[in-house]
Image 1 (cartoon, rainbow, N blue to C red):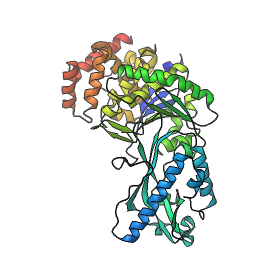
Image 2: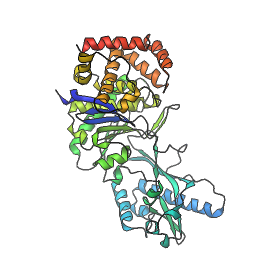
Image 3: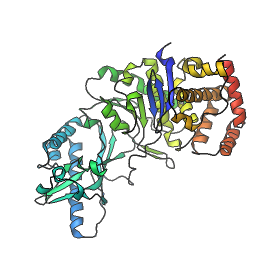
Image 4: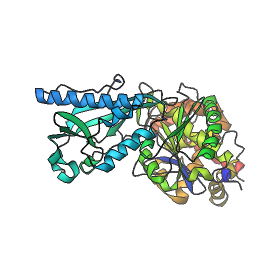
Length: 451
């Protein structure tokens, strides 16, 4: 059996996933752990200060806002001297060296936007920090306002995204500097780390997106570049609503880097790829910060056919994200993504769902639709949930037509969490059957296909 026929699917407590040879392909519908954009975008390099009551605070806000604007402009202009003048010269040497590396690592990244947004009304009390962390004795003043990095990758992002930065500022002789980007960790405000925090970046462009990697990955990048555009076209062929058709693939060099990009609580050791979005507004159909983050080791084990399935599954989640309300039935979301991933792959139902095939032969077909809680299980139970979902999507497409499967997705996913009666109403409207008749037809389909 080929590796493409050993695909499995599972869902962890925080994300949906597909397993291939013991590894998992993950789709995170939306990551609320990251801050939402604080409103309309500001001009490039501009900070967005409020108006504090007293003049001293107003002066500080203006000075730090100017510091952030100069820092952003230096990044966009590739002006290392101007960039380093924003760094506190009395800060510890590791921090100053890390800032030099950060600037160097960003040199080849195409930036459609890079700016900072200052939120002076959201300020931490730094008096709780030890002096050895802040260097308080060397600074006349310290300040820890909330700061967002607002950026967009050229060739990949249509909408800029915002990420929180845990910046600590210090004033010496009337001048404000950036003193640290990790001193606030112990107060719960951490700096988001991008690929450029982990090493020099390389960006390879295609018609429909970019592959962001690090040096030394030329062979894997070439495979991704060859498959990216065909995968986007394959998804767009079936997905009917407008989406950007721009994809950012990120290939980190380590599990630590991958964890920084997808979230600290996700089990990156067992995944092949993770699809994430920083912010989703279903009302305006706006999605920011969509990425497909690939495992530094797992993705290299995939054959070309398997890589194709993985990319098409993940890109389906990207395409449908603006039309998918959180809490929609997981069997539909993951079943549909698997349907698109496997479409035209030549993988049969028995090859792609061997555990389900064994169950049907030994104990009969499932007696109900896969429940969301099943996707929070593990091992064989999780495999069953995903294989059942894919087979159900295949049944609907075979019995009612592919267009009807798409319509069902759009109708159910637009509702989000729904009662059993509401789900039955939508099933009747789209398929002409209720839940019981849908399950009965699916059972007959499985008995026939997996006999």
